Structure formats: C-alpha cells, structure tokens
Length: 373
Image (cartoon, rainbow, N blue to C red; front, top):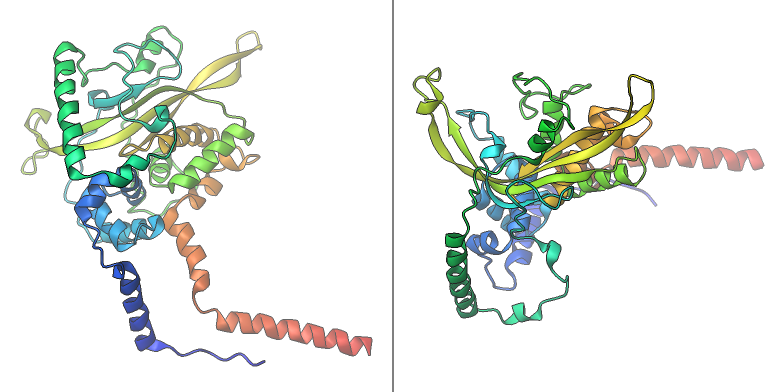
C-alpha cells in the first residue's frame, strides 16, 4: 500500500470548527458563564491557578469555550494573559493579613486563634446527593435565608478577629523549635518573562509549582511521600482566605506605603508543612529537626497547595537519585500547557517522518529476506 500526503486545506479546517460548535450547542442548551461561576468553583480555581491569571469571569468563559476540558481552558486563558499589558506590580503581601475563611492544623489540636473548619469536602460522606437533581431556585433561596439568619447570630457572639490570626509557625519559633532566617528581599525572577535556566532560584520554583498542572503536582507530591525521597510532612497550618492587594502611588512610586492604592482582593490557599529531617548535632549524633515546605495557589485548592509544599522542600534539597527531588524532572513536566501541547502535537501530520521510518523498516526487511535466500 502506498502512502501519500493528504490535502485538506482551509475548507476542511473550517468545517471541523463548525462541527466543534455544533457539538457544543446541539442540545440547544446554552450554559451561562454566570452559572459556571456560581456552580463550578473548584474548576475555576484550578484554571486560574494554572493560568496565572486571577479572573473568575475569564476562567468561566474559558471553561465554557473548552466545554469543560481543563487543559484547553488553561491554554486559552494563558494565551489571553500573554496579550495583556502589565502596568503595575503589587506591594509585597503579608499573608498574616489574610481574612481567613478556613484555617486548620494537622499538627496541633489547639492553635492560637483556634481551628476554623470553613467550607470543605473533607467532612462529607462522599455519597451521591440525588436531591440535587430536583434543586430549584426556590429551594436554594429558602436554604440561604435560613443559613444567613443563623450565621448572623453566630457572628455576633464570636469575637475572633479573622484578619489577625497568628501563624502557627511563629508560635513554634518563639519556642526555638524552628530556625529563623534573615529576610531575603531579592526581587523574584518572573518565569513568564524569562526563560527558565537550571539551577533555578526558589522564587522560580514556587511560581512554576503554583501554576503547575494540579494532577501532576499532586502525583509527584504523593510520589515523594510514597518512597521517592521518603518525605513525610505534617500540615502545620492550612489557610484559605482573602488577601488584600495594593499598588504604589502611580504618580510617585517612591511615596510612603500609607498612600498606596487598594485595588482589590484575591482568594488563595496557603500551606506550611512541617517536614522532619535528620541532621548531626555537635556530638555527631543523629537528631531530628523540622523544615518548612511552602505552598500557595489561587482559590481553594488545598490538595495542590499541600503537594506544592512537599515538592518545595524536596527541590530545596535537590537529589538526582530521586525524580521528585530533581528540579529539571519536576518543573519541566508539571506544566499543563507544555505537556498537553507536546502530547497533542502527535495528532498533527507526521507523514514525512513516518514515511522515512517505514522506508527504513522496508529496506531492513528486504535485506533480511535477500540474506535468507
């Protein structure tokens, strides 16, 4: 059988795009972007994190356009992000100023300020809720009315300041259980404006981890725990909440911070994991110390933030013996656009290269047959 190049051209591509639109709307149901924003919170948070663009509206639009395909939605939003000008950089954010919605510690039962369970699937039964099939606007409004009435009375009796909760790690530092380090004010390198070169800085690693594909980051974090490096952390503190953003005075950037402009807030998940390591004391004896692994990402994305904190510590102590400690292996394989793009390109025409391989195989086969004769 002979192989020839297939010619499709513009007309074939246009028909393919029409078919794509047909498949999206053939049920004659239009999914509103507002509905995606209201009911797909977890998906929106993942897309924003992997795209490095905080916009619930644009993330919802990308999800609609991609028909729920996460990789395609991230690709769309990253492509759009690359067209946007960057007019300002925000001031350094102190996460201690987070307005906390959820705050837990797996290391201590009692922490300063208390544990705040917030909204999480951790405490659900993981059973299908078939009542959702008949959920209506009326039932939603009734439930919300009852909940808000109960919630307002609870807030009045609770005097906790949710924007001034102390960090668990600071509590332990005061006891001398964690090392303190000098503040490093080195300006971080921007991985979206500069090609990554190895070895990387920690600022580059954290950026690449937070915009890494959620499943890939989780899988490699799990691999590090399971045996590739034998990292076994304990979540010291996990926070979900809103962080205020401000920029310097655009007219006089050297002005005092009191004159900064508040531009809004973003929801983030922040994790500080306590990771035991073995070190030698002055008597050359093994003793256990703790290091901190750090993870932060847009929205409520707790599993990814925990996995990120594991990989942060693993990459800080690079070790080529373990793939989870090899920054080239980790950082070059967790990017959803890079990985899905390369895999997807295999669908594109490879006629010439495949024909070349076929010719080589045929020549070898023919040579073997002649040799046998």
